Image (cartoon, rainbow, N blue to C red; front, side, top):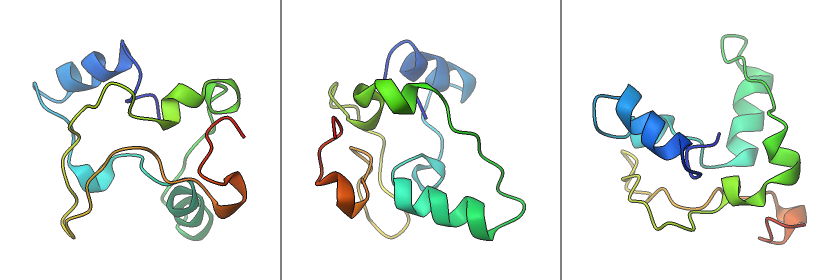
Length: 90
C-alpha cells in the first residue's frame, strides 16, 4: 500500500530486483482491492493505519513510473471510490 511513499518506494524496488512488481499486481484502486478481498477467499489483505491518516500513500506526488497493466492502463494515483470525489484528503 505504501509504494508511493519513500522509503517504501525504494524498498519495493530493492525487493523486486531493481524494478517494480508487475503493474497488474500493484495497489491502484480501493474499489478493486475491496472487491477482490471480499469475493476471493485466497486474497487476504489487511488495512494499514496509514490509509486513515496519510493521503500521500494514495497519490503519486513523485511522478514515479509504475508501468502499465496488461490492458494498457497506466498506474498512477490510487483510484478512489465515488464518495471520495477524487479527493484523497476527504
